[in-house]
Length: 615
Image 1 (tube, helix red, strand yellow):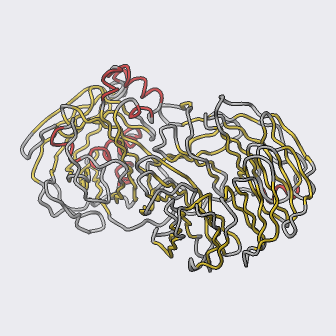
Image 2 (cartoon, rainbow, N blue to C red; image 1 turned 90 degrees about the vertical axis):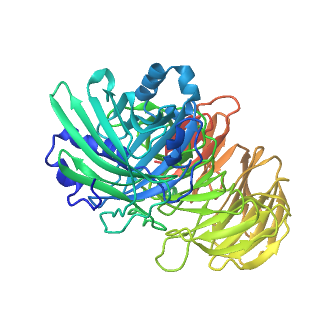
Image 3 (cartoon, rainbow, N blue to C red; image 1 turned 120 degrees about the horizontal axis):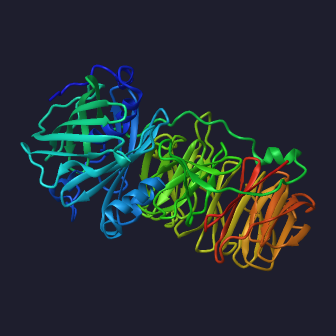
């Protein structure tokens, strides 16, 4: 057993072994050695898995590990029971597991999924199962080579104790293209164990060490690779340390515990709708984009299902959603012929809302957490709110060249600005009543409504209350260039001076509130019965049109989405610039409209995704 840091890097070891062996380093070495989290909570033994179940990390928790090649990896852990445990896998893997285990076994199976995201932008996932035999590795995907174990690779027996020995063998890929043979022995882990950075990994009570030898063979190529590892597992943390070799070349990793990670470099922003609208004269033909989940080894899978949370858009033109089960954040690249899943994160618990704040993707959850990811999908930090956060996180510009703060309005009425780098509160203000509608940021102010029919303006730098009025129950807010507007649930539109809160006008519209924009001295209000362009200073009606279901866009043009059609409308005079047909989705599905870059994107809750480009 080795207790020091490895002397050589993973990259060095890859140079000396066949290419197919290098592909095994991530899905196997890390699996055998590296699933842990940044908290030390004990996990109560599960119905299955025996005593060893306490080593499995809790649902939704995260760890950061540092490998011997200097690469930082963030791991997120998912715990589930039943069929949903295999739904995140590529279609071929899911189908094979259902066939091998049988529907009845899959329905009662207890799963542990560990998803890794590195600072180099690489992602991979390992699917484990808790069984009466212990903790087994079922499949790995996301890298250049996928693995599917039959029978499953036994990582820890149900009653593993120091001195115990066990083994397993079988196929590591369908039809025996790869086979595996593993032998392991448990030892008492007392330390000290240090990482590549020389820092000792703290142990908690009950940690267990495992010495393993795993041989992966290819009958066709007559090749074999041997992984020799010493691993330390701690209760509630998974594998916190490892050191070993791949074909005699040293590898290893150790758990880190930083408060937060620096975000990855910003992706290049695409042309904004505002800029494209200034020169565009038409809206191109619409296109339905199928949802595709890629895998470099197992191939593409088609995605379908419900999208429970309202989507968001990133500055670099990607679409942010929550998956059908509502427990993963998904980020999609909108390519010419399809929407391709870029990455998925698992913040823990049901995702309530998603938003994009500068280079961050931010999710709020049913566990009252606010969780931030960088553009590569690495979880950077997590912060606990005092109540559910139902509205999407917003960007709040701050002084200097710092990234925007993350503005959060909890249902409790607590409004908080979080530092984008650490997740620490910069300020927090209580409204004294439950919040209502999404807050709006403009001209350094934060506008937020509450259930006591009040509208409050906060100083974006300090959170101090600047003014407060009582216009009624607000369904939507908008503000820009010194003007603000509130669309009430009664259908009335109230125009305000943004700096003082002084009312400029109060005009009634028929129907239910659907959308609101303020731009270039015009307030665009949409109900299901009417669309209207109002002068932001006086409330005089500049134009009116048929109502609709959704409003999107900024700058010189807005898009009004109706049943069967979408209209591109000039903001100033209401002229219809273009009208295009819409493919209708399932009956009862609701629809979100977003201006993503220079395109209009519609996403139905039943998964129908459509896109039109300004031209």
